[in-house]
Image (cartoon, rainbow, N blue to C red; front, side, top):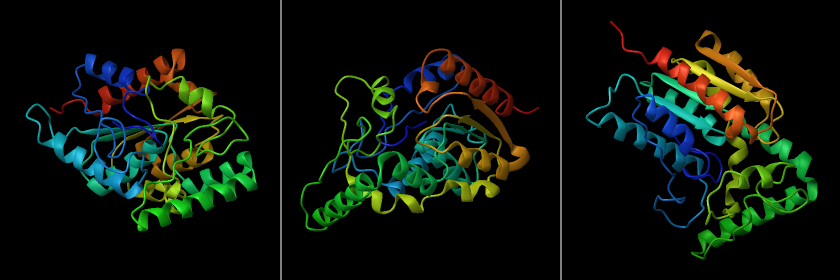
Amino acid sequence: MAHGLGGTRDAGLEPYAEKFSRAGYLVLLFDYRHFGASGGEPRQLFSIRRQLQDWEKAIWFARGLGDVDPRRIALWGTSFSGGHVIVAAVKSGRIAAVSAQCPMMDALAAAMNAGRYAGPTSFLKLGAMGMIDRVRALLGMPPLYIPLIAPPGELAAMSSHDSASGYRALVPPGWQNRICPRYVLSIAAYRPINYAKRLSCPALIQVCLKDSLAPPHSALETARKIGARAELKQYDCGHFDIYLGELFEQASDEQLEFFNRVLSPGP
């Protein structure tokens, strides 16, 4: 299990992990390098390539644990990691199931959506700061940070109408609201939806129909491409609503029911 863009394991994911653990599952909930409790410099550096490597290493580590059945490993992702689990499962080839909650399946579609809600000026400023941050990295200089979340109209990685309030409802004290903007130079090329037809294991796709950050149509199309192996759940809510309250209970219950069914031991 791992979080989305800029998230750490203590930002709303522990209740899921604890629920699965109480049901008898062994849970490996990790922070990506550069974030949270994991090492890596500079801090708050978002790298798709490195995060996929972290998934590969986490799977390898889990397979080596004495109490783990290596044939029954499932991947759980949310938001940006909801796309990662599709890619990681395809690349591994030996994953039993994936659960993707409010998943970011097409970063190009997400970037275009961000351009609409943030406006062209903010979008261009974000790109310029990404280039400056990249040049600073090449020169061996410290990163140029921007806020990860901000209210609408302010420059940030996420500034939709519910980003600031929704994210802050999940984060613990001391959470860092910043990120290296160089990620914007490569993020649009990342499209987990293109891996959907190659996924060979059962997949639970949970779509928030009012999602302001991860376009729901991309998640719905991903489920369609996965085909008979996909189980689709839809919720009339925004991106952050599913982490709390009754929607958390509903979504996590459905995840647990899915895992109990598809990961049950054979004869």
